[in-house]
Image (cartoon, rainbow, N blue to C red; front, side, top):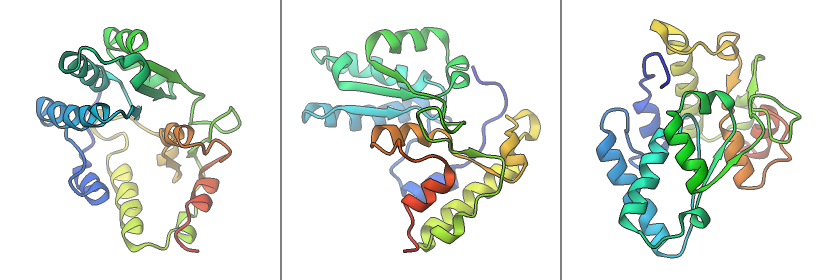
Length: 202
């Protein structure tokens, strides 16, 4: 339900994940096939699926329905987990899909990653973050530079979502608060803490 044009970031995804990503924007059915195959392989080996929901949940709902169809005896409530952090992400999700997920799987709503001091890291800043001093790996530098360039190029353009922090020269990777929560890094306060914790310049 999100309004505005898509931000074409496929080059960034390929640089970061090298073929280990799916393009649901261009081909929803193909992406669903790819991701359900990966998820079901994990589930069939006794693992659980964790989804850090960096946006709306429509694709996740389709994925869970596909898994239910393919693995009807699976206890999806215990084995599939979604972590969501933002009211806005929920508001632009198709209501029926959001209701389905909250009823069917383990759905965790954590405090908003756009703000610090609320129980999860705040990974959005209006101020410029000096990330370069903590990132020494050449590939990671290329990834961050490309991400920032794409964000600046498309922010608010032709009806796309206008991120005020990006416009002011800051960063917004607030959805990563979910990943921090999943892996136990809730003691991080803000973006500066993030880059210090995961520094590759040491």
